[in-house]
Image (cartoon, rainbow, N blue to C red; front, side):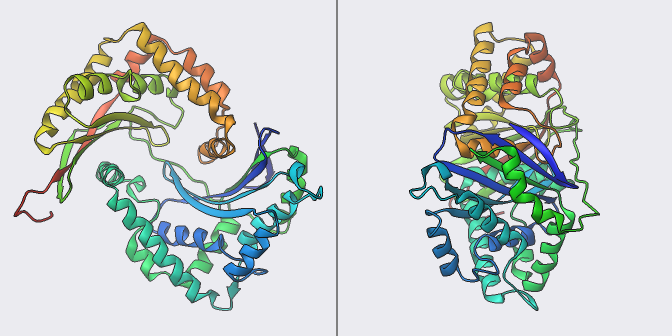
Length: 425
């Protein structure tokens, strides 16, 4: 794995491998996570469907079919307070074409034409296409709200980070999406092309220089002068803990606890916090699973995860409403146990093994490798899975205890099951 600069604000993240029959490429754009997130999410989904040469979905799909069934898709994610917009390509590796045809170059150029040469009218993007994508994106937001585990986590983060950009949904706000039009999206597109950092990820059998030769011409034509500098605000310690309760007609209640991890940037004390979080609640060997879920039977599931891009630990659990407070008390107690060092050397080994096994398996999948390359895009740093595994293996018991001591509870969100006769809050 390697990252090289192509030009100002543009980099190539390259992983050469012959393990896969396919080549994976993604064009990733970093934009601010702000009130325009909905417009940008709408735009990236729109760009993946057509371009100037192939202005209809039928013509685009026919072109992809002629390239051995290549596929182009789009995705939206957030890394800290940066919105990552991605156009993703999967195509057959040149080694497996029947006529020895080199289709990778053609596929990459098709991907880039979707971004640099979209189907635009004098008034911006086609209104009919915009309206279609607006409907699909709103459906996607609604589907996340219907998945109560995702909904509860998002609501906790919204409350916890209410005065921070991180509170915003990666898909933006419905009213912003509904009010978007082709002209607005055209203005956003120009900002992405000329002002936003871009990283191209490549996972396949071509050399780094070969890939650079394909993509470089697209940026040589552009005057990219004022590249945005993006950053994330890290709050190291919670001033106090607050509880937010919301009622809905759900069969199973949700309890989500948000904690500040004491980080000042995405890799600050990362290894120790990762191992500590695993011992606390990220595995079948963890305290939350063994005690809160299994021994005490207070919840259907209970786990903790570290969001290092924002310095947050999130504990998620499914509970009966009457058990929510007992489960919360038990979660707090298990964190105190970690702070006191009440865990075995065997548990430390299990935690490290669990994390490292996952790290070592990342390059077994082209999609996972691409996701890994994307992970460090917003932070400006880069580590290979092997480097992170080396950090994890060196973490000591004392470092785990110190990491736990830095964690402070910020927000408790409880989604209660609405009783008969009650109405939604």
